[in-house]
Image (cartoon, rainbow, N blue to C red; front, side, top):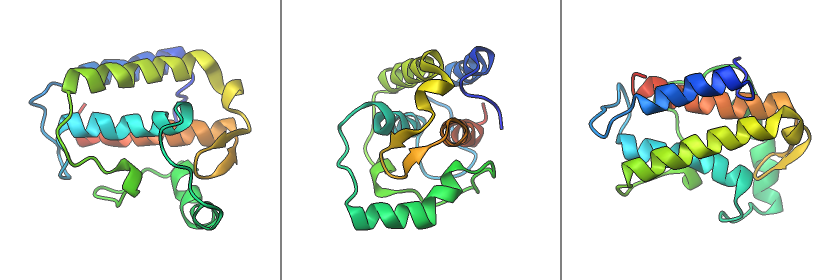
Length: 150
């Protein structure tokens, strides 16, 4: 798994994001490129912003038991995988604004570095190691950039 906290890797991902255009079409799935960018931003909103309701104890236990290992391991996501309701984007978004937000989140993540995230509490899965955070961040964005051919 590539290291999202490495400046060179972050710059590579930002380069891929910058290769997206409003007219870029997906290789699979139903999201438009603006929706995909907004969808990817949710991961960082959950890490940095307090705008999504936290799951209750029962739901969090289920997420930790059944979803966490899928999200934080190194195995790539399958095409057309189901997503959590918080990540569903059904309306149109401002392409340029979502792109800039994502790039800013990527930069912030890299600048804070792996140690900032080590044992940091995640919104849905409890405390994660820096490697688990890396896997979650990298694998998600890589999946969607591949979806859009960049």
